Image (cartoon, rainbow, N blue to C red; front, side):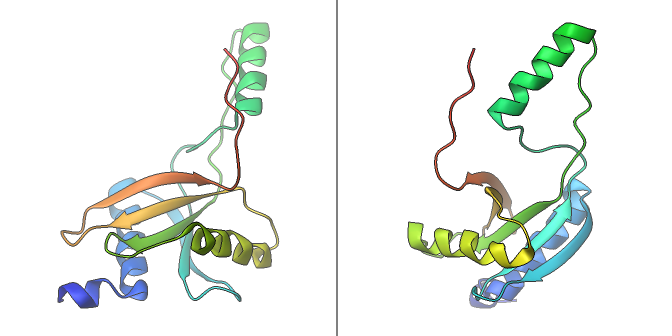
Length: 137
């Protein structure tokens, strides 16, 4: 496959899904096609929770102090936005992806950005919509 073929959004999505399945053991993977976006997203279940909101961290720590046991943190389904490293994205482009997710029945506050390089390396980032208050120490 040539470099320009790899960069096609649908090929990027397939490569990211394969990476999530083969390298990170995600399950329940599916492609998500949203109404207002030309991008194919991936939705799946990671093996462990990827992100814990600061408010939830405080509650988990309080429960641990009270009971002496760690709070069980079950994994949750995540939306993944596959992009190629060569693509140029603006804040408006990312906002449009978040807006398109309202059609899935929930308003997602975060997505996982999966950046694919020409050598098939995928780097993952957690993207939040808007500001997230820092955790209190």
